[in-house]
Length: 226
Ligand code: ADP
Ligand code: ADP
Image (cartoon, rainbow, N blue to C red; front, side, top):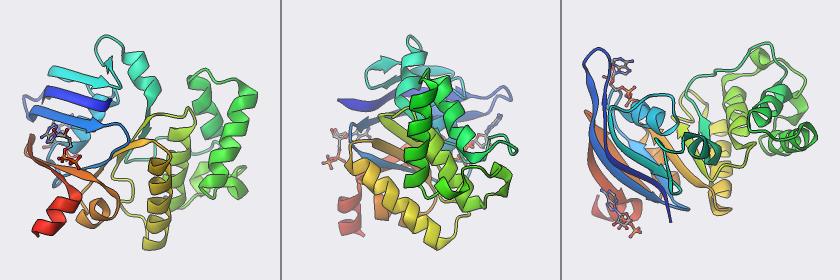
């Protein structure tokens, strides 16, 4: 089954700027997929459309068989999103961020607490569960975003530049955790402009350039050709 099928996805912003010019892309279930491209290429716009943050102008998107236009709630329920920026309340205790997110997905409070503990331990944040999120460093905030994205057990995890501005040690720990998650069956799509990150993690990559998908390939094949 495909985790994601995008067909002729276009985005024209209010300004008249055409950020996506008809993207066709499919990602298989279980894949670890990187969307590469320079700043301004349209990566965040594409991710924004799949995660219901941006309305597409035309085209279709299907996630695990659910059509984004006809079944937006089903699409949301199978996706976990790790945004580029920290969009949580800075005065909320760390564990409440994860518990509240579970609440949005209708997970009962006792189950939400158990899951929050599980993911906060996994991401080495359990010791800091009572701290306000503003006390976390950049790398820890990023890990909290991952814990929050996983609490409803999404089949597809989407990360927008997950390790931008994160130091090398934390980056490697995050990579290791993402590999583990993928090995356990979660399909992962990330955007990055580090080729090294894509190389280290991903089985397939696609390159977006000025709103067009200009290449899609198997990472192993690409490395052989270089
Ligand atoms: P692998 O052989 O490692 O599984 P491939 O890169 O050959 O991977 O392609 C995996 C799947 O993605 C294939 O089913 C292929 O038809 C499909 N595919 C390849 N290129 C594209 C593309 N540009 N857009 C959508 N699907 C593609
Ligand atoms: P990337 O994530 O690859 O850096 P984006 O998807 O953020 O690219 O942006 C693609 C293009 O769309 C850029 O030229 C950007 O300036 C433009 N863009 C992004 N958001 C808006 C908006 N709200 N209105 C108009 N143009 C936008």
